[in-house]
View (cartoon, rainbow, N blue to C red):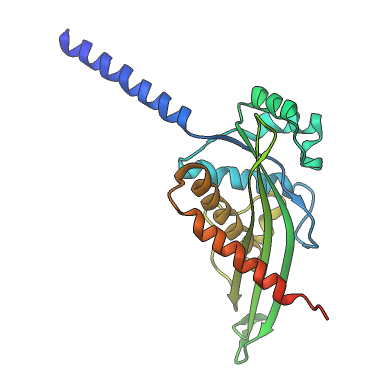
Length: 236
């Protein structure tokens, strides 16, 4: 009897500890991604696909409680927040109340570039080229994290993803793409997108959970991006 009582006490304690841990994790929702680039792979449905992919990556870290997409869509559509990107404190409080989200992550693809260059020495067999060409892709995503209580943007960062491939690409992502993005599974574009999403996950874990000095590397990366942008400007 005493042993059973001890087990019950231990079970209650573990449940309590688990509840505290859950409460300490930020609860976030990921809105539909928007596109301001000329990316050829962007088509209907991609915005929510990228939202789902980022949500999965964030959940996999164990650092966040992630709100289900179905809970977000109707609320965001009602306020047209996904289109405007603006959240007032009153609307933010409504989002938080209806979805449980303390924060809303908004992503916009602002730049996409791709190119193919010749490396020489390639061979072809039955119409399949091996080697001889190198493809690369670059994507920039502006990330904003809106506090649903205040309506203020608590965190903002431009995240860049880059990828290269030579010859025939055979790699697959963890889980791969689905839906409208399925055909990008093996392309440099797909790799660059996945890289940007993983880096976004790392950034959010750093600034929202870890907060152990890791922020400095993102500040340095942002500074390098700004300098690169400035050097590309042709100002007489």
